[in-house]
Length: 504
Image 1 (spheres, rainbow, N blue to C red):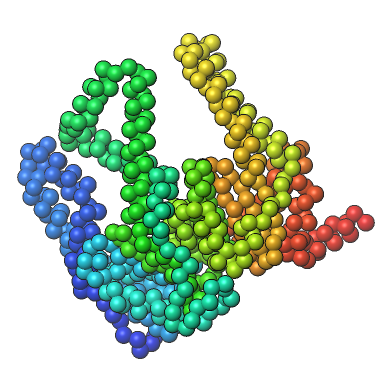
Image 2 (image 1 turned 60 degrees about the vertical axis):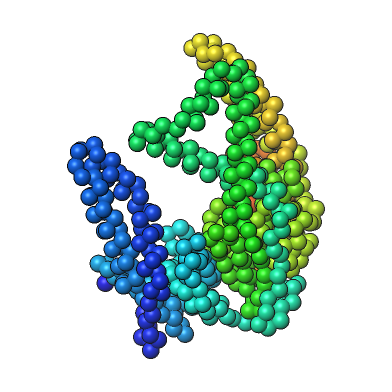
């Protein structure tokens, strides 16, 4: 038997998952194994054997594996620990101390909701992908809610702007239908269209399936002028991606609600088909981040993300529970972030600019990078006889690099406001992060060869939350040490004193 953690002998009884999960896991295992089942079917046809029989045998095996999970999984909650015992051939006892519980994520897919079940993931404060916490799939809805309340029922540890009466919650924000206009700019549809296109292409090649409507469209485009066909394909692609992105936005965020509970936790609910409920302790928060993608910025949209210990970032942020607001109006993102921080100033304060040297570095890198492409195509045309129009088209890149460099410099900045360090950077994704200075555990000063020549330095604040490193890029060298000393007074004093002593 393999044990993970330390098991403490207590009188708490071991409990099984809901028996109704027997209707969930076999279906899920079949859905996961459908490529194998289809492969066996086509393999049988190719070898002229009974592929249907082998497919049926594989189906029975998959269903039995799903049923075995219920018989081999038990759990219990003691005053000190949460323990999960699972495994048929390889037994495991997974143990998490209750004081290590950071989040409780309750998810219910359409099949779960039909059966009154929910999947519970107990987050343990570790943000790596191999350790997502304890999973209990599936509990009854009532048991899942009871477990969530029990594990995170602690006295409030923070003072917030929104007062909460005992036993109730204060709603910070909720989904508004007007937010749907930001759906087409979330780009989630681009991923979905790519996956579907890849699947259909693979199916057409492997199973020799013909899609007549695609052949009709291809024939119609072949009879159209090239420039018109290109414009029509681009417009069709944009329409499909926008519609798919909007549909994905509705499915993911319909019914979104962010609220604060009297126990000092933030409660996030969202989802149309699959409903998700995430509870996050506010005492684990180290700040918030406003994220504006290049497509959201022109329409005035932004996301708000929590900087908290044990939660993922990026797309993982949405899975890991740190998304405090989906794409919504920028003013709403600022309001939500200010409510969570308890201070609106860090999200609106004017930042300290990084000066002409930082600007010059951005223009230089942009022009060198984009200028290398037309030069390379020009050399290929001169020595290898490649089409000359490639070099001419590539001349557009340096013209695009100039506004990109200007935007990247315009978005640089930092500030110290009250208890928070504020940094902003990025162009394709502009991020403004307000980090609680009490959560900073160290500093990194980085200076490349070219930065030394330019007299600038990158100042990184390290923390155990979020991306773990938040950088103020290309800060003038004369401002770097004062910035650190003001953020955490006295931290650099011993090193500076030693340096002065060495000089003496």
